[in-house]
Amino acid sequence: MELRHLKYFCTAAEQGSFSKTARTLYVSQSAISEQMADLEREIGVALFRRDGRRTALTAAGEVFLVEARTVLAAASHAVEMAQGAARGEIGTLRIGFFAGGIGLNFTRIVRRFRREYRGVRLSLVEMTPTQQWQALVEGKIDLGFTRPLEPQYLEELAWETIRQDQIMAVLPKDHKLVRGTGQTALGTMSTLPIDVRDLAGEAFVLSSRETSPALFDKVIELCSEAGFSPKIASICTVWSSVVLMVQAGEGVSLLPLNHQQAKISDLAFCPLTAKNASIDLVLAWSPKRDSVILQSFRALVGAMRQN
Image 1 (tube, rainbow, N blue to C red):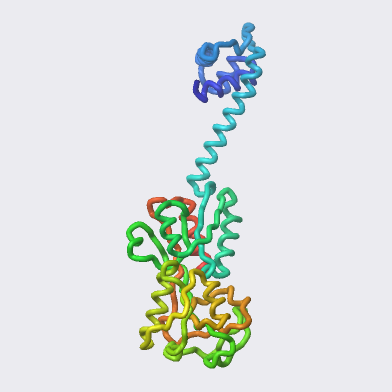
Image 2: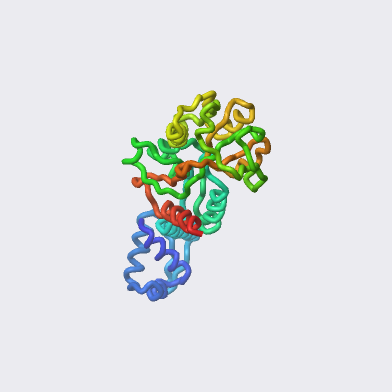
């Protein structure tokens, strides 16, 4: 049994005549008669009562008509879904992110994508940068807002830089190096930059290299260029824990500028004099699993970045 058998049957049931059905479908009447006879033989029941030029459904035919229409509707829906998926309008998109690096634009991008691609179900998964890379390789997420990749992932994953985050010195508000502060939308900010060399005698709270190698290495690089190795008092796995440790007096830190700082009143966030005091935020994905949906999302990110 093929879909055309069901289409012929439904049309014949509606027209009440094989001749009218033939004209409607632009096929010969004999072809319609043969197809309906084949269908009846296949299912083993009479579907039509034939009376000269007129046909009428039997009781079995009436039941079969309901089910046939359901099957044809489902087939039509399946075609529409497949075509929508091919256009990137239908499907799922799993996005990895980490709270310490997304910024306000992340939520704007997600909201806009949801408005423009209502048939795509977005799933947001919070992961550290290293967790995202492995999840991309394993196909557990489709896209990641993350930090620059470690060398071992460069062959398997593609990436593009979407933003450079300025690295700030995070200090207690009453620290001797904090000068010329003012309240901004991002919290207490110092108007006078700090030379990393002035932090040589401080204890440092760092983000773990296991969770964010790029940030850890950048901090070590900045300190090394300033002529010292940081005295590490504590290592934390997430941005919020680093901030908490600084609040508790454990030490100072170097962190990318983040919108969440607006909620922290007892810390100061000071720019650095070093010209390379920044770290990339990148969008990463697996080329093996690229899709129209992924391409549409990346295009939207690119468009919003330009604006």
